[in-house]
Length: 237
Ligand code: G3P
Image (cartoon, rainbow, N blue to C red; front, side, top):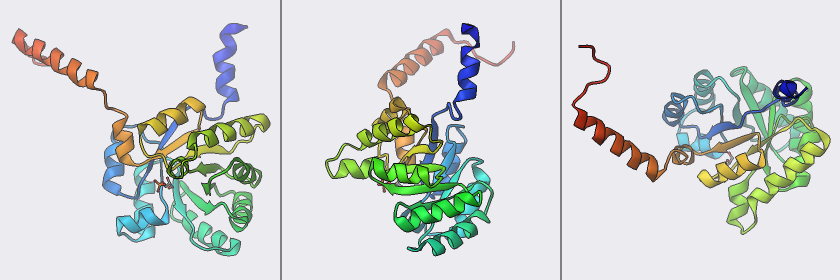
């Protein structure tokens, strides 16, 4: 029965939306984007926290309060035990915290343990499809393949997103592909075309999605023509 199809599709697809996360720990930048209703979460890493110049607990708590979606905070230990301890500490900040661990054997071990305890985990620093397969097998909620850093070394970052999409779809892994290290609007566009579940990008790249000269030109013409009518809109009488 064809008119049942959209309903069925909604049920079958756990995340039919393309989520956009802001890749920053700058609270003002997050606030400005959040007011537009277009961001679904935030990702941070130790470098972004350092750049904010703020205390990690304080800044993450503020971000979690501001944006109701998943907010990633990263562990810094190199052993699984330390990552699990830090992960539990991060999760006490707020219920929407996601624990970010690196794609190392110890990180995967920590992901397995934290996921088993019911904590959402984002496995980061992924540069190959085999690494993404390992993250999915360990129960990761998100996998973060870094497209920009692959492009930086003359590799095709987006090809990795395509490979992971294929592998995850082959086996119905529920781990969400979170395209990370996106540097500009073309990375966001390509990730959406491939079917990445999420893309995280610096605020500048998200703002760049708005840009089109024909929008600016068209708006100017509309307003110039309106001005000529001498009418006022929204005022009675
Ligand atoms: O948060 C991880 C990732 O998005 C970092 O991006 O630009 O430092 O490669 P980038």
